[in-house]
Structures are given as structure tokens and as C-alpha cells.
Amino acid sequence: MLRWFARRLLLAIPVVWGVVTISFFMMHLAPGDPARTALGEKASDASVAALRHQWGLDQSMPLQYLNYLKQLVHGDLGTSVYYHAPITSLMAQRLPVTIILVVLSAILTMLIAVPLASRSATHPNGLAAVAVRLFNAVVQGAPTFFIGAMLILFLGVRIAIFPAGGYPADIGGRAWALVLPALTIALGTVPIMVRGLRAAMIESYGSEYVAFARSKGLPERPIRYGYVLRNAGISGVSILGIQVGALASGALVIEQVFAIPGMGSMLMTGILNRDYALVQACTLVFGLLVVVVYLGTDLAYARLDPRARLS
Image (cartoon, rainbow, N blue to C red; front, side, top):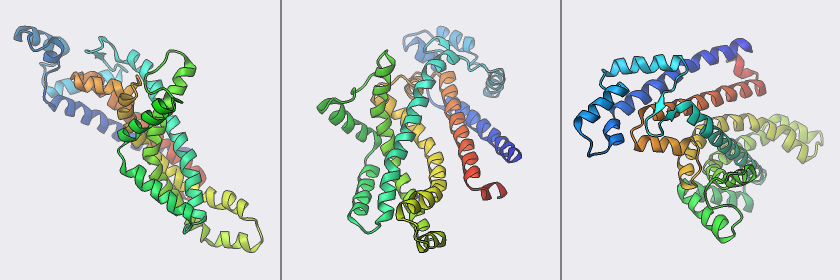
């Protein structure tokens, strides 16, 4: 098992290197000059050239790339030219907010998707299954920011259960403020999870071991939770692991909609201000998060289904 996991870990290294390289060259090839953006359009060419020299932007791109890799090897993410602060300290403030938001979104996704998939698979031709399919079609067809706006309008303004936006100073207020954005992100991934779980559960209901359990007189409830849901859970773990990337990308947009000070809003600020170091660091951290989740998914999958280790 340890050897299997070490092999998976080694395969993640080129993925991380690819994320670092692509983000670096995409930012440096994008139009716009960060020095000009920082000083303003009225700044003299001499001032802009001096700032470019100070930041090392007048060096050749391969040399800048090598210097960037050297920084990363020493654990230095650089300094934000917009916030005028070390990026590691900015990350320490913003990253926990985004991680909590993504984890809460994953929990809400499972809490909504599992009962819907279970009900739909138990009575695949019933009224409940039709209602679930209709729910999936409506939610999947609506953009995430539109769902967020509707939730703000209904739950944040009309009923006023949750705050419509912002991030209070107290811990209780912060936890409450994250529920609505997490629900918005979760609703974007629920249809995919419901479809995957429903298909796996219907397949399990038609399997020989379920027929054998029924022939022995085992009640339907233990069959559902002890056999069908347990086997469908293997498929659910894989789908949830893949969807974490979607949850993280959803956080980028939703943090802007709900004014949550996380990594997503910081990344958008970096892009708008041509803050190369900040954008590259945020992209790297998001890439690392996705890689870690994929590794965790592989580990969970291998624990649930030993055949995965053999393959």
C-alpha cells in the first residue's frame, strides 16, 4: 500500500511542475505591463523602466523562469506588488477561508446529493425520480453566479436568514456567512453527483448479491444502506474527488459575488493588477490543493476497493 501511494506521489510531481510552468508563461505572455499598471498611465518611461529593473522584468524570460523556480525551491513565493506584502503572509490570511468554503461545499454536496440519488434509484420510475431529474435539469442549466444571486435575493434579503454578503469579524458570524456561498457552490455540483450515484445504485440493485440478500429475507433498509449505498459510495468518492476542482474554481467566482476575502478574490485582484507573483502563487496553491485531493481520493478508493491497488 505504501509503495502504491509513493508511486502516486511521484506521478504528482510533473503535474505540479506543469501548473507552475503554464501559469508563469501565461502571465508573462498576457498583454499589459505590471510596472505601468502599478505607476499609472501618467508615469514617465524612465520610472517604469526603473521599476521593471527593480522587479527583474527586464531580464530574459528563461532567466526569469529559472529565478522563479529557484525561489519556489527555497519556499519563497515572492512579494505582491499590489498589496506590498510577502505572499506567504497574505496566503496565511486568505487560504483558510477558501479551504473552509470548499470543504463546507463538499459536505453540503453530499448531504443534498445522497438522499436525492437514493430516492431516485429506489423508485426510478416514480414521481420522486421525475422531480429529481427536473431539479437536476434546472440547477445544471443555471449559471452558478445566477444561483448565488437568487439565493441572496431569497434567503439573504427576502427571508433574511443568512447575510447577503461580507465577512464579519466574529467566528460565529463568519461561519454563518459562509453557508450561503457554500450552498451556491454545492448546487453547481449536485446534479453530477446525483447522476453518478443514481446510476451506481441502480446497477447495485440489479446485482446478484442484492438478489441473494433479498432471497434470504433481509429487509430492504439494510440492503439499501449496507450493500447498495456502500458499493455506490466507491463511485461517489471518485466523482467527489474530480468535482473538487470544480468546487475550487466555483469558489473563485462566488467569493467575488459574496465579498468573501479568500484566495479567489485575491487571485482576481492579482489578475486585474498584473501582479505576476501573486497570480502564480495562487495558481500554484490551487493546483497543489487539487493534487492533494486527488491523492486523497486515490487513497480512499484503494481502501474501499483493493482491486484499484492491483491495477
